Length: 286
Ligand code: PXL
Image (cartoon, rainbow, N blue to C red; front, side, top):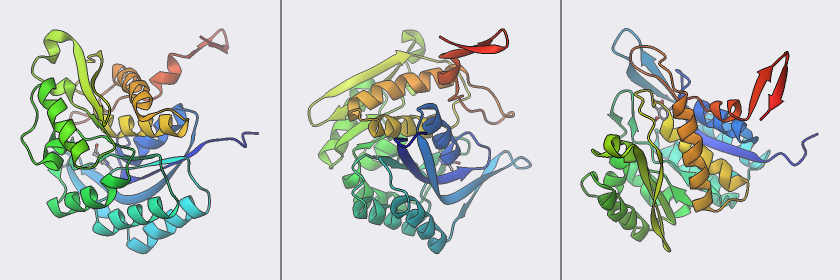
């Protein structure tokens, strides 16, 4: 029996291709040994006959509310995250339930772009997310583009600029920021490092691992935020959860692979593979 099973939830879109969105979140929760639930906000599909262009289909408000009741009232969570919300009412429902059920371990992944398509959600929605959800989050996990949108500045191009933008977000009310995207900085191939930035009221630090040089990074943002959510649910501080999540995503990307010519995800289960192997008709724990 696993009566003490830790329960976590994602309020996010479904990615029909399976690499990002709630599919990535649930895989990640599972790798951390947690029980994951999902409230589906939108369904994202990709068109193989039109260059993998994205379609986004919102789930009706009453259906989303029913899912929130099931999860937050019917079960309860130790932590939750939001990903692609897609509609104003999804933002409002997330705010309502996180407040009503006092979810302190809340991770805001302010999804504005789908990597596959470079599709930005509408600006009013991004403003609603900032106004209503940012103050509730224990940590927000923007990429370079999302951070610049939220801070109202140019996209950072150096680690020093990343720190400045992260500090602006803390000044704007974020309790903690994990600004991802060190793998996009011009010099990362030379240094061989993927440097992200963690910032809260007390510290502003680089968080680095070795760079995994892969084109197949679909879902990396979702996976990172889900890993941080899992760490928080297990009692880690935001900073500790970020350090563990950074290693989790490095391992996931180290085992990334193409789905087709357009897109490819990491493999969250690489975490497990490095911990146990199958040998002589049985598995051996490493
Ligand atoms: O990676 C951003 C993202 C988040 N959520 C959903 C997505 C995507 C990108 O494809 O489909 C549902």
